[in-house]
Amino acid sequence: MSLRRPLVALAGSAVMCLAASGLAPSPALAAPTDCTAWVSGGYAYSSCTSGTGQHAVGVEQSHPYAGPIVLTGGWTAVGGVSSVRLTPWPVKRVWVNRTG
Image (cartoon, rainbow, N blue to C red):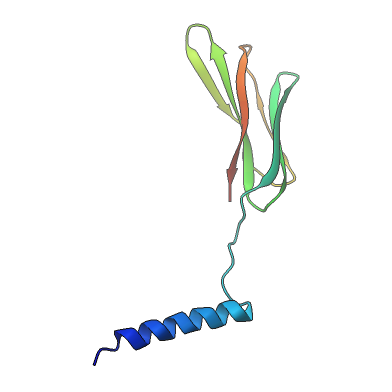
């Protein structure tokens, strides 16, 4: 007689009991949400107001001869502001990088 089936059933029951009792593991971090990115005064910024991870502003600029320039601000926690100084070339797009 194989023990595989009873062991699988027992493991499944244990997971269900833990989940029902509220002891199931929860994620340590949740990616930031409610994020915005903007450009002002020669800098690009990002801010996130929800979640528990980190965020950083990302920028793509266009150089007429060298092509795209990609810049990234420093990683910061939710509630903080990430920033990066821009080059003198036109901004093509701005976004928020998220981790968590």
